[in-house]
Image (cartoon, one colour):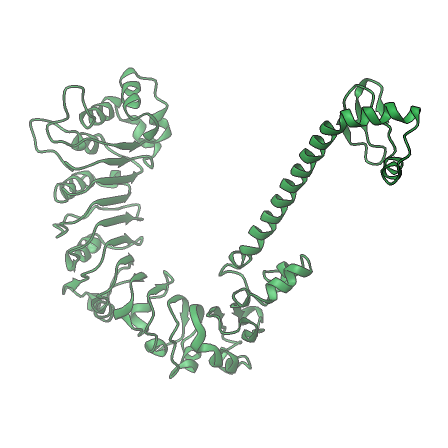
Length: 478
């Protein structure tokens, strides 16, 4: 019925939907009467003629309105279809490694309860049923790999002293499916892993070791020709206790004291491309000084655990030979860090990241600057420092009366520098930035022109004419 306040606005009595209609009189021609007249030769009544004429005049507008509504409904339907197809096409993405395919509160069980179509779809996708968390600590022991068909499996296995996998009825099911294992994460007793010795793991690509309990060695995974990723928990020195096809590994994440046994395994990793190593304090009898050659390594991140004696990181970096290394990260977690003084043989380094607190020792900044002088090929530098010093900023400043550090530097990130740096006079920062910016009449004599910089918020917010001029050069790149 019409809205009294807006004569041209009408509302549906069923749903109260408001729609704007033409203000002029609408045709009241009866469609059934029109159909009857079309089937005979009788003329319309005089009272009907005016209605038919009005209907004919309004027909183009009515058709146009109907076409617009049909198009709008079609577009809305297409959006719903695309949204449904998008959701259905990404059903498998929701089942990440941390989920358990057999848990009723996790995908794919939850997905199969959305509607009948999703249930049929989830049951038809074997990859949804290929991830299992078998945690005997929590007495979770259901696993039915049959529903996954021949799809590769991702497993998390955990056992306890009172719930041993080697004595569990689920063991034969795991043994029968071992040829389909692709990703394996476990925390268990070494004796439980021996239950799989003699098996071949042709699809196994990644092993993540949580905890290894008990004594002895693990040689279970020697027949895993496609193993590429090997990682161990910070409290588990897997390099000491596990034998795997180290020659095939391309990415390793380890915490280790670099015992002779570990160094032997590292030397086998001739295909290693990325290495993340956290150094522990070694026993005197474990110190191994011989060289480690990693001919394909391109990324190396080394950190020192708290309590590691000074010089451990430097000793490792001088010990390892990496002719293709392009990215290096050095991380110091100790509150009494000492930046190592060493002479690395790194000729291809382009990216360097340093995490630590240079203010812990008066020699740290000097050692860091000396290290930078030995890696002139670096184009990207990130320093995360709780107490960056003026000595470091001045050292990075390009000057005509001395040899400049990092002449190829294009990207500088000091955004992680902490608030202690506020005590430094700002003029040191301005001078360093200005010395590495392109100039109107040329560039700095060293050619060290920065392309982008990242600074901490406390520095970015400074109201200073020199800083505003620097920011205008970089614009959105800061």
